[in-house]
Image 1 (cartoon, helix red, strand yellow):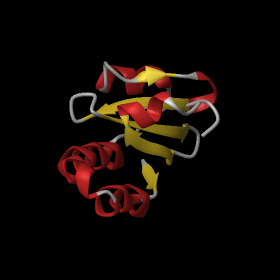
Image 2 (image 1 turned 45 degrees about the vertical axis):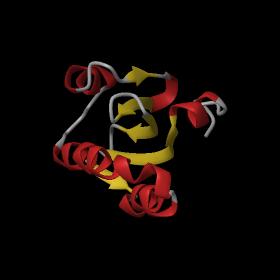
Image 3 (image 1 turned 180 degrees about the vertical axis):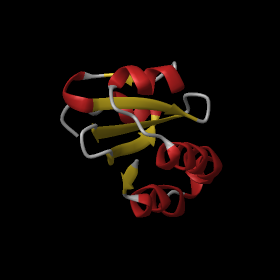
Image 4 (image 1 turned 90 degrees about the vertical axis):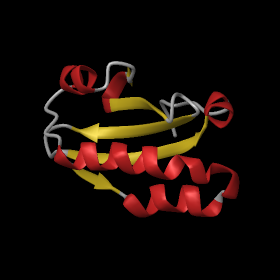
Length: 100
Protein backbone atom coordinates (compact mmCIF):
# COMPACT_ATOMS: atom_id res chain seq x y z
CA UNK A 1 0.00 0.00 0.00
CA UNK A 2 1.06 3.56 -0.54
CA UNK A 3 0.47 5.67 2.58
CA UNK A 4 -0.23 9.37 2.15
CA UNK A 5 1.51 10.77 4.07
CA UNK A 6 4.30 9.82 6.44
CA UNK A 7 4.93 13.55 6.97
CA UNK A 8 1.48 13.90 8.55
CA UNK A 9 2.23 11.10 10.98
CA UNK A 10 5.67 12.51 11.78
CA UNK A 11 4.23 15.99 12.40
CA UNK A 12 1.97 14.50 15.07
CA UNK A 13 4.68 13.27 17.41
CA UNK A 14 7.09 16.09 16.58
CA UNK A 15 4.47 18.79 17.11
CA UNK A 16 3.06 17.34 20.31
CA UNK A 17 5.76 16.77 22.96
CA UNK A 18 3.22 14.97 25.16
CA UNK A 19 2.64 12.47 22.34
CA UNK A 20 6.25 11.51 21.63
CA UNK A 21 5.40 8.02 22.94
CA UNK A 22 3.28 7.56 19.82
CA UNK A 23 6.30 7.58 17.51
CA UNK A 24 7.25 3.89 17.62
CA UNK A 25 3.68 2.50 17.52
CA UNK A 26 2.81 4.80 14.61
CA UNK A 27 5.95 3.79 12.74
CA UNK A 28 5.14 0.13 13.39
CA UNK A 29 1.67 0.65 11.89
CA UNK A 30 3.19 2.53 8.93
CA UNK A 31 5.74 -0.20 8.21
CA UNK A 32 2.99 -2.80 8.32
CA UNK A 33 0.69 -0.77 6.06
CA UNK A 34 3.27 -0.12 3.33
CA UNK A 35 3.97 -3.86 3.09
CA UNK A 36 0.27 -4.76 3.01
CA UNK A 37 -1.81 -5.37 -0.10
CA UNK A 38 -5.33 -4.83 1.18
CA UNK A 39 -8.02 -5.43 -1.44
CA UNK A 40 -10.97 -5.15 0.96
CA UNK A 41 -11.99 -4.13 4.47
CA UNK A 42 -12.08 -7.82 5.37
CA UNK A 43 -8.36 -8.09 4.70
CA UNK A 44 -7.64 -5.08 6.92
CA UNK A 45 -9.75 -6.58 9.69
CA UNK A 46 -7.92 -9.90 9.37
CA UNK A 47 -4.60 -8.16 10.05
CA UNK A 48 -5.88 -5.60 12.58
CA UNK A 49 -8.67 -7.29 14.50
CA UNK A 50 -9.36 -4.25 16.65
CA UNK A 51 -9.64 -1.85 13.71
CA UNK A 52 -13.07 -0.33 13.19
CA UNK A 53 -14.32 -0.55 9.63
CA UNK A 54 -16.52 2.40 8.72
CA UNK A 55 -18.39 3.04 5.50
CA UNK A 56 -16.89 4.33 2.25
CA UNK A 57 -13.38 2.99 2.88
CA UNK A 58 -12.79 4.59 6.26
CA UNK A 59 -10.90 2.62 8.92
CA UNK A 60 -10.04 3.54 12.50
CA UNK A 61 -6.91 1.99 13.97
CA UNK A 62 -6.08 1.86 17.67
CA UNK A 63 -2.48 2.95 18.22
CA UNK A 64 -0.37 2.38 21.36
CA UNK A 65 -2.92 0.29 23.19
CA UNK A 66 -5.83 2.54 22.19
CA UNK A 67 -4.17 5.69 23.55
CA UNK A 68 -4.24 7.16 20.05
CA UNK A 69 -6.61 6.81 17.11
CA UNK A 70 -5.68 6.86 13.46
CA UNK A 71 -8.41 7.40 10.88
CA UNK A 72 -7.60 6.59 7.28
CA UNK A 73 -9.46 6.39 4.00
CA UNK A 74 -8.40 3.46 1.86
CA UNK A 75 -8.70 3.37 -1.90
CA UNK A 76 -8.59 -0.40 -2.29
CA UNK A 77 -8.53 -0.37 -6.10
CA UNK A 78 -5.40 1.81 -6.28
CA UNK A 79 -3.89 0.48 -3.01
CA UNK A 80 -3.57 3.93 -1.42
CA UNK A 81 -4.10 4.76 2.27
CA UNK A 82 -4.84 8.41 3.03
CA UNK A 83 -4.26 9.58 6.61
CA UNK A 84 -7.29 11.64 7.63
CA UNK A 85 -6.81 12.05 11.41
CA UNK A 86 -4.35 11.15 14.13
CA UNK A 87 -4.93 12.14 17.71
CA UNK A 88 -5.47 11.06 21.26
CA UNK A 89 -8.51 9.03 22.13
CA UNK A 90 -10.04 12.16 23.71
CA UNK A 91 -9.42 14.19 20.54
CA UNK A 92 -10.93 11.41 18.46
CA UNK A 93 -14.09 11.53 20.56
CA UNK A 94 -14.58 15.15 19.45
CA UNK A 95 -14.44 14.48 15.68
CA UNK A 96 -16.64 12.65 13.22
CA UNK A 97 -14.41 9.88 11.85
CA UNK A 98 -16.62 9.62 8.78
CA UNK A 99 -15.99 13.23 7.71
CA UNK A 100 -12.46 14.15 8.86
